[in-house]
Each structure stands twice: as C-alpha cells, then as structure tokens.
Image 1 (cartoon, one colour):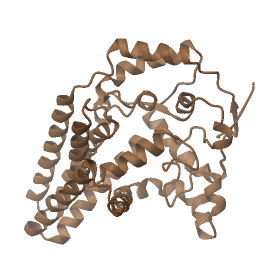
Image 2 (cartoon, one colour; image 1 turned 90 degrees about the horizontal axis):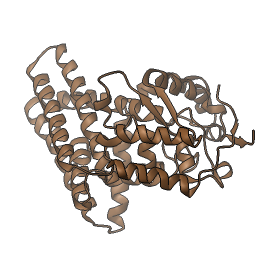
Image 3 (cartoon, one colour; image 1 turned 45 degrees about the vertical axis):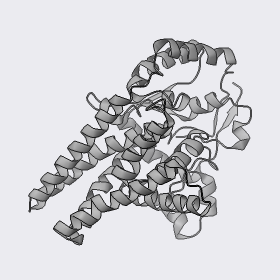
Image 4 (spheres, one colour; image 1 turned 60 degrees about the vertical axis):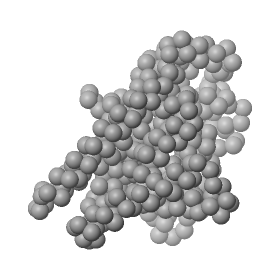
Length: 354
C-alpha cells in the first residue's frame, strides 16, 4: 500500500516562498486577537466543569457519559494552549506563556515547557523523521522498519500482528505517557537550575492541577471514585488527541538524513503533512488543527485565521505544482490503522526522478 519510492518533488524557490508570505500578510492572517482565545478557553473550561458537576450529582452508571463529554470539552481547551506554546495567541511572550500554562499544566496536568520542546522543537522541525520526530514512534508501537529490527521476540510479534488493532485502546492512556515525560522534562530543567517564567508557571500549574482535580474531590467523594473519574475523563482526552494529531502525518512519507538532504524545509512539511476534511459542525472543535499544512508552514497563524490561510496556500500550491495533501477524517483514521499494520516493514521513502 505504501510505496518505497516517490517522484522527486519540484524545486521550491525563494520567490515561491516570498509570494506566499506576501499573500498571507496582505490577508491579515497573522493578526492575533488574544481575547478570543481566553473567551474560548473559559467557555470550554466552564462546559467541562458543568459536565463534571453533573456527573457527581448522579449515583448510577449514567454519570459516566457526562465524564466522557467533559473529556471532549477539555480536549478543545487543552489544544488552545498549543497556541500559547506556538506564540500564535498573542504578540507578547509573557501573555503566550500564561495562556499556555492555563491550558496545559493547570487544565491538563501537562508541562507546557515539555510540550514546547517535544512538539515545536522536535516534531515541527523534523516531521516524520524516523530519528528526530518523537511522534513517529509512540511506544510500544513501531512506526517504521528500523524500530521493528531493533525489537526482539514478543515485541516483534506485537509490532507485526497486533499493534494496529491495539493502537486506539492504547491511545486512551496517552495522557499518562505525556505526564510522565513532562515530569522527567521538568526534573531535568530543575537540575540544570533553569528557573525561568515558563518553568515557574509549569510548577504552579501542575500543583494546582493535582489539588483541584484530585486532592479536593477526593475529600468529598473518596480517592477510589476520584481516581476512576479522572481515568475515564483523561482516557477520552487521549483518544481525541490521537484522532486530531495522528492522521496529520501517519501514512505519509517517512524521512531520514539520506532522503531529506537537499530538500527545502518547506517541501519536507508539504510532503509529510496533510489536512483533514471534517464533517460539518466539527471544525470549531479541532481548534484549527485540521489545517495541519498551513499550521506547519506558519505555526504563528492563530487558529481562527487558518481557514482563510488554507484557501490561499492551496491555490499557491496548485499554481506552482507543489504537493498539498487532504483526507477526510474517516479515511484518515482508517489510513492510520492500515499504516500501523504495515509500519514494521516500512523504510524512509526514496525520491526518484520521473
């Protein structure tokens, strides 16, 4: 299904880039309106709190649909923090840090400095790079043939025959993996005595998250019920985050140092990233992350301007014969599963002249 070769992409010149930047700048898509982000974050938080409050009012099994629904609102709110980390929320670095901290450590229990390191510096800079992009391999999965070759015994059996079918259930535990990585990242910063504003915001936010989400509810409802509710809510968040991010890159060409040498950075983004075409009514819930092509090329564009930017970028790509990938949400989820079924045998693609 996934070819080991692909046509060599066309050249991308500085003139091509300048043309696109000018069109986007003239359209005003880089303009930031921080109040819109705060209003949406407040609304998502309020909806989540309402669902959680309603959950605790019901003493039957029917409380759990409210817990799951709260996970939906939390996912949307958490992804708003993604804008603070990309500095697309505000022109002010301090405002971006505060906004990111409100959505990530406080609401989500996830370090904003860790997310910035993992997502901005590693993933965005090296999408689908088998050695540099942390999203290519999500343990215990193998995202490419190299990871499979390094595995042994039962792990190889899992990669070859099981991982595609267990990927989505395992995704429900993504929140624990991210939090553990957050703790390790913060611990390293503390040992290095890197006490800047983002780190202090992380520490305060994470402590507040534990108090508000676990310690206080446990005093009212007991630790057993509190931990169960926490697990249900954040399992939903883990699956929804995977639905948002996985189809954007999984199934597109894998990159390494051998096949990316000589490729323009923008071209790598275009080759390894695709947009999601969503059913009516879901666009607002993805916080612009269905427009991954535009987001990867210009991560400082606020989410509310990405639909306008997407129309401009797509016309630009068609004008110069450049790759521009789109897929429906349903097809994208199927493609992710099929890709993981074959990932054990896949290597970075070789680009060949037609």
